Image (cartoon, rainbow, N blue to C red; front, side):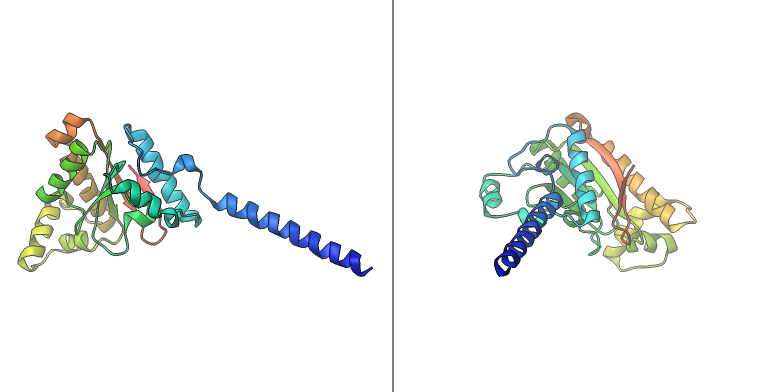
Length: 221
């Protein structure tokens, strides 16, 4: 009888172990959804899919960021092959590597308050598109953006901050809704980047996106 009890306990533990392994495997992202450090992505559709799948993993709590390791760094020391340029805000709540669930070497990030496409941002972007052959540029604005809010309500600011406000103000026009103003600011940056000579020459795709800081959802336009 004692032997039978031991056999039953061992059997139960074995079943639990199998279930645990299966659960871990089901939570692990498919390799086809994850960019490899030495993978050159030539088409914007694939690049966009990587971002969409990454945001999906983030929302489902199945992130892969921990999989960046010494082997990846060893590959990346020879150079970088990011698949997308992300132009986004400096806000501490909107780190694209996190909400797109990307690792070292995956995305070329340009950040400033209000995600504006000023000359410095365009210069960085031109390098990524022309010299790194990045096929996709995404301008990501976000809900409750402080920079857009400053331009929306007006007022006087310190000289350097005023430069940012002055860049956003024409983009939002006479909008009477903050979220609409945020979207107009995204559209303005997309239009400015799309008209860049190097971006046009290289055939890079430029799209806008909106990140909701409350839900974590990214909506592409």
